[in-house]
Length: 295
Ligand SMILES: [Zn+2]
Image 1 (spheres, protein in one colour):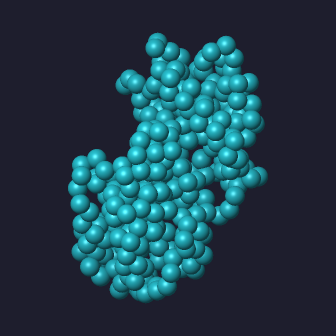
Image 2: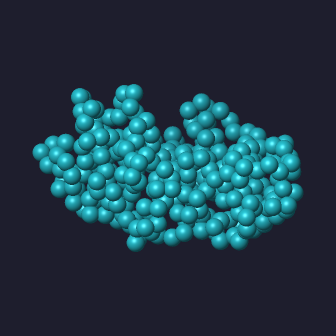
Image 3: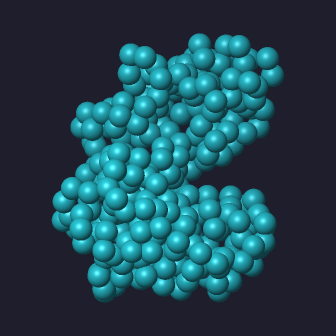
């Protein structure tokens, strides 16, 4: 359609751009709880293009019947044929700060300022040294909105349970908790990662509990930065490995994966801290334990 030139001047919720009424009137319940009521259509469509869904920020968790409304809205957008598709695809017009340029800081400030800010888990996610796309993924994990095979099964995109099995163990349905936490291969990986820190014992059983558990550890200074970054390096590496298995039919190399996690943490921590210390990347990868002890 030819709307593109106007996408950034149309208010997603308030303007009448789809059908005969605004989406705020068509979905008043969702409009009432969405945080950013002045969001423009272009921003929503770009997010949808990147994450395959609109990822609205609501001021509280939605009830099941509200989630159905959200699904209905999403389907309405799908069938509308309106998509973010031209050279301006990556442009974001962010209203969270005066420059209109999105930054994690401005998003974080908006969230912190909101009275319903749920807990300090947001600090763990948005003050993390991880790259922005990894922070976004961590946020989706926390919200329980990762596009696993089980999610696709529920939507009818996948038609049988066999297709929705975990691509690591082929024994359980691929839910977010299973894929990122419970799967026996992933569980072992978490165990190995924690052993680098000398931590033994069971992990929490759910991802949102894992975030709180992780945040409760009391580390100082650089050790804290490494620890926080590690959580998202593990989740992100598992997710990319899963995608490789799903889309390219590759078998995970679990030993290599642990080295990849260390490299991701090392790169981000060195970038974040401007670290000039005399340990090399090899030190970080092969002697992480001693670096942690020195931090
Ligand atoms: Zn599994």
